[in-house]
Image 1 (cartoon, rainbow, N blue to C red):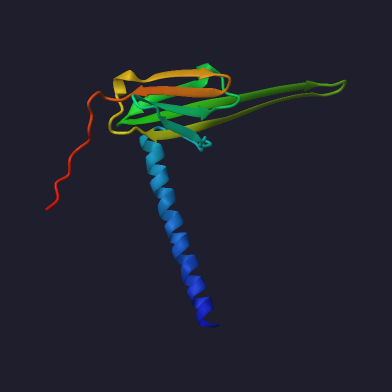
Image 2 (cartoon, helix red, strand yellow):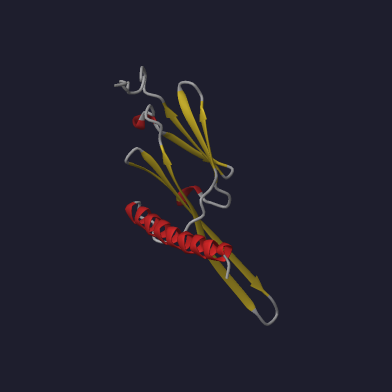
Length: 145
């Protein structure tokens, strides 16, 4: 065994340890936000429109009634369940299948986002959320020492 093999083994051990740690952290976050099982995490577009923010999320195959949007600690928690039902019939057989999957995403809001102005609309598989900015918000000044 050479030095390279020793280094490689050490890297693999450290990687395994880090993955175990991240799984614990993810599990704690999921429990905090109320997730019971694994969901897909959809891509999000967050656009600054000047006086407001626009968030767009593709949620294909989701019915509007199965989307839940909640504000938790200045974060948007979005959960969407997708139900797929399929039935096939033939001369001597019947097949009926159901599948459930879902999407989840937690989006931290910018500090100047006005939580009281959030509006959401779902059309053609796309969720659009509009959030106005707080008027006159200039952030927090940090003094140098």
